[in-house]
Image (cartoon, rainbow, N blue to C red; front, side, top):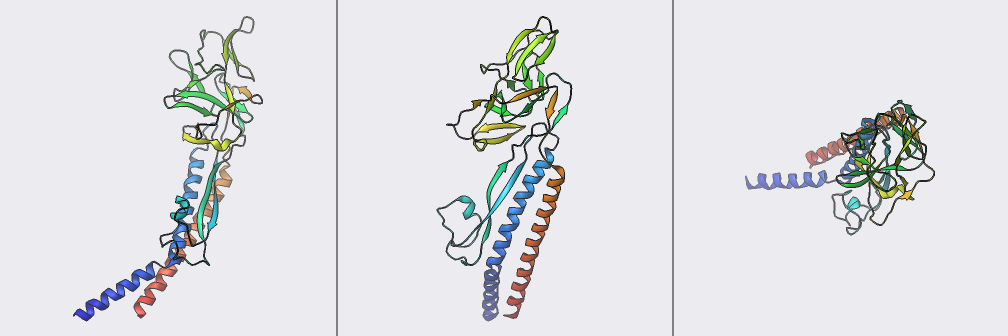
Length: 278
């Protein structure tokens, strides 16, 4: 009986060692990265009809063992084996970066005077409960106190970084290409301020926060006044997501994930055969 127990434990130990075959880990690493890509693509498709949304993309890279445990978290998460136990002839898949494509989206005419589309590189500046944020979504409205706000109630700021208030709502609201707001019938217009438009030298300093908002990741980065940015009133900038391209990328990601699954299954079957033979 003791002999059978020892043999059983020995076989289980061998099976566990085969289960930790590095090929399984490499395939699992690649499959996890395809899941990351699918999450990014799914988020793009979910925001297809959101004004001002900018699509995201994933860049993969290869990493080679032995891994340095003092390097990045991303590197450590790509393997389950000891840093120096991996074969130097293999490579793992890693996510190099998730980037945002800030290219211009097409304009959709709405004829709503508080729908504003930006042409060029830049953002509206808004005041939120979490602080100053930036957005390309110009789908604005008036709140109960006649302030110009986003659909979520965040205040749109003027050139002095103050809230914009429309004193007289009986006149026609006109927003010029430079963001100047005037109220009236065309003969006796009243100045209601100028919308603050900003840009950044490096868009990588911004991170998405949700609801079309961006926040500054580096406290040393300061927004610059956007002098080459134009506003089109009565229109909205649609998202720059290409639905056909995104669907194609999703199919490619699914097929890659299935390929990794087949590799795992093949190696697992080989391990089972080896264990049974022993």
